[in-house]
Length: 446
Image 1 (cartoon, rainbow, N blue to C red):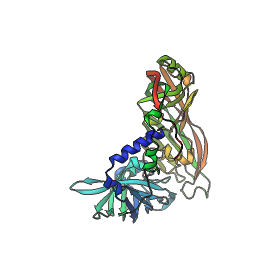
Image 2 (image 1 turned 45 degrees about the vertical axis):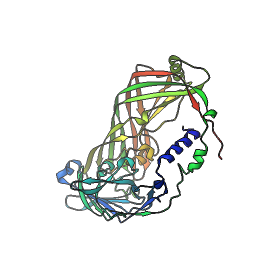
Image 3 (image 1 turned 120 degrees about the horizontal axis):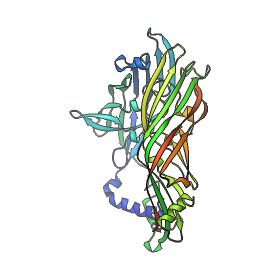
Image 4 (image 1 turned 120 degrees about the vertical axis):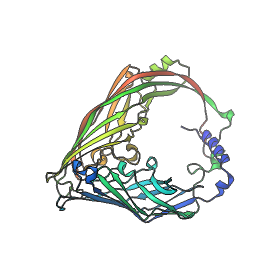
C-alpha cells in the first residue's frame, strides 16, 4: 500500500519529468465508425470431418460504440460492442438445416498497428490489453484464442486516423475465417476532465507530501517459504445435456448431450509469505515459527503462476452426429487470494468476471463444439479450490488437492461438475526476520 506522502512525492517527480509542451496539449480522442463481421465455415482441407464440424457456418457482427482518449499521444483503438451477436447454422451433408444457434457475445478489445511486408500497415489484436475478444460464444465456431489472430488492413488517413476497411482470410482449427471490415478510426483533439493521478490534482497530491522529519519508523516481522511446483495431475469433468424446449431452442441445444474434461500443466515457484508489525526484533527461526502458527497474515503467489489448460469436449446430437474437439487454453489466471492466518485457500481460474479469465477473456470451458460456458457451469465460482493449513508450511513435500463438484442449470444446459487435481510442491527455500522501515502518517484531506 502506497502511503499518501509517497504518492505525493511520486506525482511531483512525474510532473517534473513531463515536458511543459506535452502537458499543455489537448488530448487525442478517437471515434470508431463502420462495422466488422467475422464469418467462418467448416473446411474439409483443415480437418473439419474428424471433428464433426464440416456443416457449420456462422458469423459474429460487431458495430463499435463509444469513444476513447489519451493525452498527449495517440489513443489506443478500443473496439467495444456490448450487443454483438453470433449466428450459426449446422447443416447435413445434403444441405438441409439441422440446427441453429444464436448467442449474445459482447466484445471489448484493443487494436495496435505494425508494419508488414513492403511497408504495408496492419491492425492487430493486442490480446494482453483486451477484456473480451470475439468468439463463437456457446455456438459451434472459433474460440477466443483462434480469433486473437485477427489482422485488418490499415491505411493512414493523414493525421486524422486510420482506415481499417477491407477483407482478410485466415485459418482457425477446422474453420476458414473471413473478416470483412468497414471500420474507420477518426482522431480529434478535445478537452479532458482528467487531472493528476486518479482524478486528484497534482497540486493536491504534492501538497500532501510528508517532510522527512515527520516520518517515523516501525518494525516488521516477515517470513517467506518457497516451493518448486513438481506437477499438477488429475482432471476435472463436466457432463451436460440440453434443457427441454423452449429453453434449449436459442442455442440449438435440444436433445444434445456432452462431456468436458480439463487437464492442466504448470511450473515455477509458489511462494507463501506473511508479515506483521512488532515491537521487538525476531530472528529467522522465530519469524518462520510465527508464520506456521498463524500469528502472521499469510499470502501466496498462486495468482502469478502460469497455468495451461487442455479442454476436451465430446458432444452428441439427437440426429446421431457427434462433435469432438480439443483445445489448449491459457495462460489462465488464478483467483487472487486475501490473507489467512490458519489456512491458505488456492483457487483455480473459472467462472464469470474478468478476474477469472486469461488474456482476452479466455473461457476455460469453451471449445469449437457448441456447449455451455464457464458462466453457465460455474457462475462466479472458481474451477476448483484447495486449502492448505499454514501449520504444514515448511514440510519437504506438499500435495494440495483441488476439488470441484455440484450441479448447474444455466442458459440452455444442465449438468454435473466433478473431479479433482493434485498440485505437488517440493520445498526450496525459507527466510525470515525483522526489518525497520519509515512509515508516513495518514494526513487529513486539505
